[in-house]
Length: 260
Image (cartoon, rainbow, N blue to C red; front, side):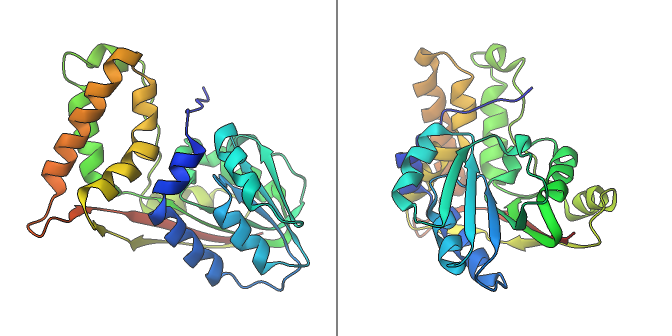
């Protein structure tokens, strides 16, 4: 069962400083000739897609995302060598069309990575490569613990009986085992630690509201959402606030490079 979440593209773009920082770093790392075709999976508001397009002035970049709101915002970043498609990442179906498949801060929203890796392999041209980064084991441990606690309380538990956990955040060995079952001729998987001290509690709150809380609030009736949101945020601030007023959260990013 595929689930689509009601993201707000404009608010997400304003709050996604971490995702933008990580994405730009990943783009700058790529070895490109300038004429490649690139597929950006989970392109969101298109900021990183634009950075990719700037790296391939004689190539093209296609960004795909399942959120209409995200893509509406993305259109503002569009250049001549960019296009956007409203498409779930799991539904990509291109035939050896791209030199590079790229993704940052998106693939933890995809639950079936066995299928995803097969689709990525089919989408790449011979000798093409994938370079992706997403949330891995140990990511946002405080938020996850608090969400599970609040979800299990009597006032909310009935609404989450059929709830499907929205994220897949694997260990390195787990993902290596998945890749070992594919036809990629070469691959590498590693974890990076991007634990972060937020300047103040509002910086953390904005990021959590526009990404992490979205699927959980969507599972609740309208009248239950404000208190659920406030309870999670209150516990998160209390648990992550440091003596100097900053808030701390863990961010562990699993990195994958694979060649066809």
